[in-house]
Every structure is written in C-alpha cells, then in structure tokens.
Amino acid sequence: MIHIKRHIASTFRLAYPVIIGQLGIIMMGVVDSLMVGKLGAAPLAAASLGNGMAFIIMIVGIGVSYAVTPLVAISVGAGKMEDCGVYFRQSLLVNSVFSIIIAIIIYFTADLIQYLDQPEDVQIQATWYMKILGLSAVPLLLFQSYKQFIEGLSVMRPAMIITLIANLVNVFANWVLIFGNLGFPALELNGAGWATFASRIFMALALMGFVMNNKFFKKYDVSFHYKSVNWLVIKKILSLGLPSGFQYFFEVGAFAFAVVMVGWLGTAQLAAHQIALNLASISFMAVLGISAAGSIRVGNAVGMKDIAETRRAGFTASLLGASIMLCAGVVFILGRNFLPTLYVSDEVVISYASSLLVIAALFQLSDGTQAVGIGILRGLTDVKIPTAITFIAYWIVGLPVGYLLGFNFEMGVQGVWIGLLLGLTTSAVLLTLRFNSRSKQIVTV
Image 1 (cartoon, rainbow, N blue to C red):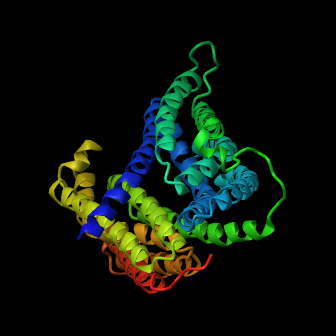
Image 2: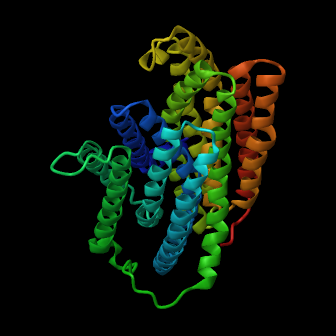
C-alpha cells in the first residue's frame, strides 16, 4: 500500500503540469474559435476544416518527438547521464528534418480542400489558413524537441508556464492581425493563422532560451554542438517515434472520419456529436498528463532494471487514469441534460447530445486506460505491437461497427458512438494485456 501511495504521489506530481499545459493548448483553440467566430460562419467553418486537416498530419511529427522522453528517462534510471545529451541532440536533428517535411506536406495538402465539396468561400479561406498553419509546424516541433527532452529528466513546469504565456501572445496577436489593430492590416482568418505561427515561435524560442541558459542542463550539452550524426541513435529514435506518431494518427484519423459519418446523418446530429466530443476531450487532456508521467516513471524503472517497480509504476498510472476518467463519467451522467445547454438552445441537438454523453460516460474508463496504456508501453520502448493494436481497435472494430450500427441497424449517431466505445474498449483491453506481458521481462534498449 505504501508503494502504491508513493507511486500515485510521484505520478501526479509529474502529471499535473502536463495536464495544465494541455488545457492551455486547448484554450488556444477555444480563443481562436471565439475571435474568428466574430467574422462570421464561413471563416469559422474554414478554421475548423483547416485545423482538423493540418492536425491529422502534424500529429505524426508530434508522435515522433515523443521518442526522446522514454529514452532519456531510461538513461536517467540507469545512471547513464551522458546518454541524455546524445539522445537530445540527435532527436533535435530528427525533429527539425521532420518539421520541414511536415510543413511541406501540409502546405501542398491544403490544395486538396477544393475536392472536399465545401462551399467556395469556405474552401478558399481554409486553403490559405491551412498553408499558414503548415509553416507553424517548424517552431512547434522545435518546441516539442526541448519539451520532451526535459520531461524525460522529470522537469515538467517550464513547458507548462511557457504554454500558458503563449495563450496571451496568441490572444494579442489575434487581436492585432485578425481585426487590424495598431495600424496592421485586417487579415481576418489568415491573421489567426499568423497569430498561431507567432505564438508557436514564442514557445520554441522561450523554451530553447530557458534550457540553453539554465545551469542544470549545461552538463547535457544542449547547444547546437554536433560532433557527428549518430545514425544508430537516429535509428533508435525513429523506430520508437514513427510508430508512436502513427498510433495517434490512427486514433485522430478515426475520430475525424467519425465526424464525416455523423455528418451524413444530419446537422443536428453533427452538432450534438461536436458538443459531446468537445466535453470528452477536456477529460482526455487530464489523462494525457497521466500517460506522460507514467511513461517517464516506467522508463526510470526500466533503466534500473527493476521489474517490480516497472509494473508498479505502470499499473499505478493506469489506476490513476481510470479513476480520473471514472469521475468524469459520473459528471457526464449527472450533467447530461445540462452540459449541452452551455453550447446550444436547440432542443433537438440537446436531446441527441444528452444521449451521447451517456455513451461518453461509458467510454471514459476505456479511453483513460488506452491513453495511459500507450504511454506506459512507450516507457518500455514497446511501440510496434501497440501501433497494430490501435489500427485494429479503431479501423477494424470501431469504425466498421459504428457504421453498421449507425446506418444498417439505423441507430443513427448513437450507433456510431457505440462503435467508438467498442474501439476504445478493444484498445484498452489489448494494451493493458500487452503491458502486463511485456513488463514481466527485463527491457534492453
């Protein structure tokens, strides 16, 4: 019992700055929507479309950046402190190259919006907005490089503080560039894109400056001083990072396609879907922090070659994540008739959203368990089988069952969500079983 309490306290201490930082990132999106919404429905729709398409591509690069955290955490646990700097410098190189590739992909993918059968004014605005967002992939992944490195060293607060300050930068830049204040031209939706670009540059430069000028990190040689390109380390980073990126790609892509399916059912159903999904994403941010903390603590235990501590760290994170999501599920059940009214007054939409919140409450446990499962398995550097699990869970189970129930069995939007519930549950069960099996062995990195 003492071990469990210690692990819960240590995991939460690492998790809460990540949780606050993730909520800060969500707030950027909320503020952008509120400010762009003042321009009208078309710019708001264009922003939603451009953001969604850009994020699906960008998530692969973000997943690749996660690779350095468990590698550094394992090195810390093993007492091989000199390896931490090597992993950082090589991951910075990898992420820099990936950021340019992703920026180019997003830029040219934006031209495909014209084939999505959207209103002409929406597609024109979304195309240029997405191109600008593509440019911001470079500073974002640079920020991620430093963030994931210092988190591997269990230093979590700086990224949280910088993200919160970046919200203020984003609000100010939106005010100036969207509406043309302080003598600047009114760039409208494109102004929101450039504001995001500016806030991400701030995030990257602020965290770089902090790390490079902090005495604690000097011993890791965090400058741009490259003795050589270490292809062996780069291969290790890519073998861990690329599958991690595709794990998130499969999950985010599945939920994006679910939006398309619900859109086939009607406007009211789509609005209800967005409301329930938005509420569920808030609780998911909390469990992402637990996942990150679990990955670090498992990595530390792996480095010490302590199987008992590895299993305790992993299962404690799973328990903590499930507990938080259980509380969220209770809130969704109790507030199912009230929470939708915070978004709309349409009785039909509220009725649909209320029924979806019941299903959302049921999948909170599964969603929390699978999110933490991905993190603690990454702490074991086990990513290839979990990537296959996420593909099977969402694209072989979740979406097909959702389509079958929603359309063939005419259960509508509720059927689509039951499919998502089964997909998340499949992922949670298989990832937990995978951790239980793999954590019984000494991991060699």
